[in-house]
Length: 358
Ligand SMILES: *Cc1c(COP(=O)(O)O)cnc(C)c1O
Image 1: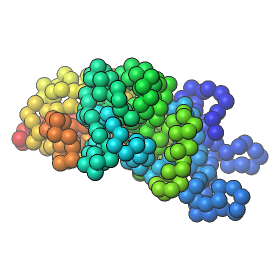
Image 2: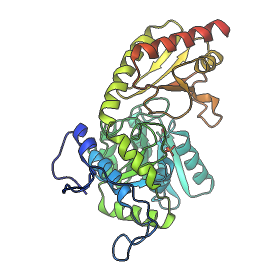
Image 3: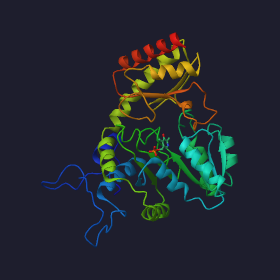
Image 4: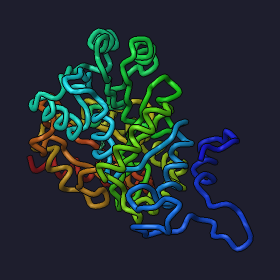
């Protein structure tokens, strides 16, 4: 349900997706486990659930479109990529979430799409590759290289050529970047990350302001059955209520850490797009030291994934699936909402341990 008042995002995350106010009604949308309904309404559990709808209304309002929730970020990604006609041309970032790149590579190998990988910071290159594309996939900032695309300039061209423009907005969140307002046709999120925010949910979402595209996605979700779990949607709704304050606090911490990391003599190549909660950096001593550092932390969790209230980090190339052009010693730090001095002293002691043992 689109809201009628255009509230500030910090208000929308709190106020949207609530049940109608009436005496005795709960403030929050209840958890509704249902595989079927009395005939004449939603009918069957795969076609809709009020607990999903509450979450979809909030994220849809935030992004300025209509949202559909999926069982994971990858399910949302696959659902949008499935709109490309067979043998269609897809332009994608050379550095993107490795799951997205692997999916595209598999589809290309199976002869279903043609993929052109581009440097998304090089707008001229993106525009040139996109002229005859069916779909342009952007992830901005990228995971984990933190490159940023000029979405507006790219959208100007895709809107005139008729290519679909998709933005994976997981790192920015709609509180920092609204791709549909910049001219994109679809937004996807891994809601498992900053949106749900507590490292306890797998959930994805796709948002569009194109009525026909929305209906096409609904139809496919009904058929493919890549629907979210009801408890996951409920947890994500609970999590998104604090998105504005979590993001403000984690971002403030991230900015302070960027300054301190940049000034640290053992650290090199600090990457930060200027907003958000993710910082990537390297250790001058190399990948073995970087690995040792991530294994030496006491407060910061050594773990993959990102966007939780707790700080976490990992050396990305410990995954053989990570892009080989990502530096071997690059560490992706997901900054949490803990006290900044506690995070910083843990980083310092982890670096010291790594530097003294490698
Ligand atoms: C994690 C992630 C995904 C995949 O989401 P899942 O919820 O893990 O399926 C997609 N894009 C980005 C940028 C991510 O960080």
